[in-house]
Amino acid sequence: MTSRRYPPPVCSWGMLVLALCASVSGAAAAAPSTPPAGSTPVAVVELKGTIDDYSYEQFVKRFEKARASGAKVIVVNLNTYGGLVTAGLDTSRFLKSQTDVRTVAFVGDKAISAGAMIALACDEIVMAPYALLGDCAPILSGGETLGGTEREKVETPIRADFTASALRNGYDPLLATSMVTLGLTVHWVEDATMTKRRFVDQAEFDRLSKDGWTHVVEPGVGNPVDGPNTLLTVDGRTAVKLGLAKAEFATLDALVAARNYQVVANLTPTWGDAAVSILGSPAARSLLIVLLFLALYTAMHTPGHGLPEAVALIALGLLVGIPLLNGYAQWWEVGLIVAGIVLLAVEMFVLPGFGVAGIAGIVALLVGLVLTFVGGDAPGGVGKSVNWWAGLQTGLVSVVSAMGLTIVGAFFLSRYLPKVPLFGRLVLTNVAGDVERTGPLPGAPAVDHGPFWPAVGAFGDAVSELRPGGSVAFYDPTIADVRVMSVISATGYVARGTKITVLDNKDNRILVRPQEG
Image (cartoon, rainbow, N blue to C red; front, side, top):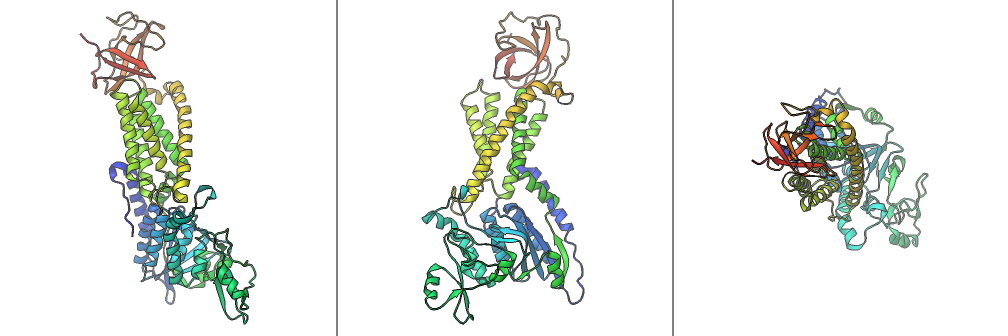
């Protein structure tokens, strides 16, 4: 069993709470009951949605609860298009290692890619008539296939797993591997006496046809069963005829009734699992990125209030915690994100202007966020699987879309946020204490305000503590009165009431220090 990557609480405390709630909810669903005499106690464990590290870990926990309920048969209720290859392989090996219970895969809708791998690992497959099973080849995005050594490196562990499952459970190995290997032609043939049937490749078919072997004629089944340009994918009726499925049942209830099963536990993904799944979706993660960027933008322009910083921390925790839970993020990717935010903080609080630290911080943050959409541990390494390339494309689209929405959101915040009653409290608009309101502040020199106000050299009074962000009152000649502005202290903490001098004012950031003398 491959090692897992668990996020520590400092990175994803919110996700650990969700996982705990999911575990508690799942335990409640596993209350055992006593089966009537003559029936077989069975537990149903559902596995649906994306197959990833998190779904694998939760599936194993539900499976163990099913075993503890006293079930002699565990039905794996599959409905998935697949997911991470590594998680699929882990789940397959786990199922093949079970010896004290019988496992039955019920495919009521679909078991594609890693789902087919998991189904074949069970002791038996039963399917609904129009459910789908198959299509598990590693390809690049856009359908481009790998070739030569690269393809073999990616495909070998997957093909080996399918072959092992076929030999273990009585499926034809050639038929099973045709779900994985592109370029195979599989013929279903029988001898002249129609007493022997076999699945053979093209070379074997050419040889046997000379000895009188012909294609099997079976209603609803094409022959060849799989061509050189397709991956074997079959519905339930065809799977039964080919021997890939043992039986056909329209519903799970029909299976239970036909085999005299008594369901003693029905373990499905909990609301916590659903929350992790939803928050891990590209759309939700894009919104979290927008929330992170807008919170950082607000913190930079109205620092010291706490709420924007808290929102940024929560969004960041979810953005790195979810991918760490489901296996899409690696520690160096999370390190890039953290390094990017640190560099931006250094640029904002330590170094004046906007230079190397700020640019490097933005690049590190964006690259790290994009890569958390990519499953980086697929067989073959970086860039050698459909998961990697598809994840990279999804990450790029999600991050670029989030940046566009952030620009729109930042415009809204800068223009309208102070006018909103609730959020307007983030920016101080009233002067605290005794501040001159009918003329220049005492001791303020005459300065050229230029295109940015307040100008460099202007004096003001700190009307809140600067930690290092806060609010300062400046005299505005255009209204002949005092106006409160959000500023950043270049010297760290400044007490309320301190006389302030403007050091820099550009890029929507006012940098100040205490007045000398």
